[in-house]
Length: 207
Image (cartoon, rainbow, N blue to C red; front, side, top):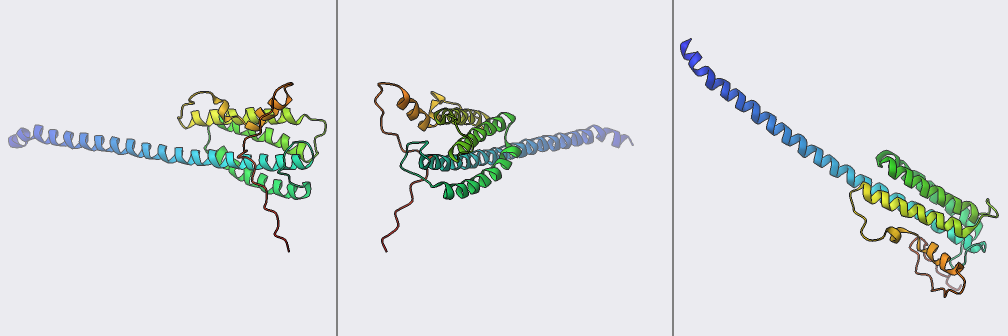
């Protein structure tokens, strides 16, 4: 019994050391797991944000081409209304699917900004297809541009990226072109290629 009591402090020390090692290792593993999970969800959020932006731009691009065909917007890349309605329906379906990922993964601010962007894009659709008459196309384009800018600002903040310089670079360049064109006595530069507009379809080969 005396021998056991003499060895007891050593045994307690061993047990305490083992417990401390276990707790330390467990804490390190939990921290490593949390970092891995954070990286994983950050990647998923970035994918959701990117795919949603592409889907909204696709809707906008089709709307602009329809508006050009309707004489609402000056552009040579036109899409007849009967073809455009079907294209819009398909693009809107894709946007709705991407929207679900945003709802599940995005921050509240990002969801609000994304909703404002697609609502402004929807106004462009309604004007382009003639469901809203008397509405000003330039103002609708400007509203869409500002909503797009806000979306990119919020998304960059959400994924931890700083905004360097002016955030005007996130605005829709078409809005700037229309603004310049409406100013009196201002030379109008040729519009830059718009990445939101798909290229015109090639002319059919002669039969």
